[in-house]
Length: 533
Image (cartoon, rainbow, N blue to C red):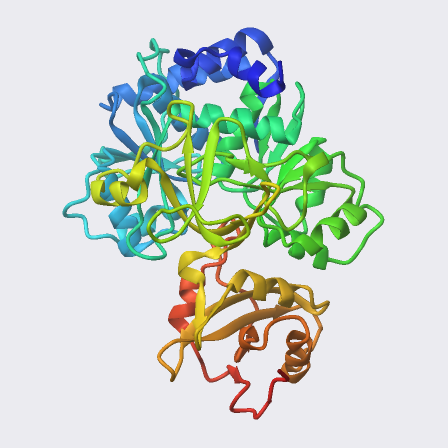
């Protein structure tokens, strides 16, 4: 029996809920460490008592099965105490990006109908700045490091101690465990309803592809309010491993954290890899024990350099908040520049605008479905129209344009909304970015469309050069025109100190599109530069 089938067979379908997973693994691993955050360390046995105790605290606050509890909190123990407490009693955790403010934050709180908000003190001002009428919260638990805090009334209280443990609720695998809100780059944020079994399957598939063995030490600097870090918790839980969560990603502190915790596995996103490579080499680049990092979206030219310098493999793959680890390959079958093949338990198609499958080698939208019950999200909370649109024809429409090669490997092209059409030609922003990133003086870049006088698009690139480097635009044009079609060469170049990004390093292209051409933008045509054809 292969590892995936073996792990799946060890947990019957009705056992694929958080409370049963915690109890089953506590019986197996007892006092072994499961979760570490700063000075806090829990064993597997502790995690059951924490879930039951904070389930009690939530019930004492009036929270019942199905109620939503919002979390505006960074990577710390209180986040997971609340998350597991919700799972124990059948309530729904609503992790919120800590950068959320104003209209977006208000929308998430109102749309989710969260009755309780758990907020770290440094984010309380963002909540207080909202117009109070219409907000659903009946109480705020304030997470603070201050030893003594004075509260004006019972509405805002300190984060409580665990209560007397309560019995777990009768939760089913398809019940919602968490609602995670998308970034809302094309409209208001959508709340993705993630069932218990979806995170079980995240743990199963990720563990197999990473080759996790019992007793590993996993370290993440990614935020717990996103799928990636929550997935890492389930990887640890299912394999008898330990998850260490750091507050945030820091290029200067990253390697030392791996060394201190003796981590064997870690997690990176595309933008983090060139940042780490841009730092000066040291004699300690390989002093850590980490053998592999789950690192989706890393440009292919960085894989070999990263392994040569740091001795760590980068594992590619594809998944999303709505889906699972659908496409991937283990290290022996990895091909930099591709995402891998569709995994057992899932189906994938590449289709045109009418959902007709296109020929292999042709680009189209990636659509997906799962054969295991509740391995995917169940829809968007309170947005039936958006759910029907995304899951039309009983397939989830990812919004990603990909190519499926003849041998079954998938290659990412771009987001459908990031495709650029210039003078009758379709241009992949991703492919242009790969050329730019191959320049030795460029640290990172984002390519996006801006308005053209010709009623279509022009190609613009925002570029961060390596520290101390200077790259004349004309020199960059000469580099580009020998490496891409003439019509794809950016017309507009803007050198910036950094790209706008989310906490987990995802570039926010919508901000670049909104900013558009500025006074500091270099225009190839205005400069009189003529491309060779």
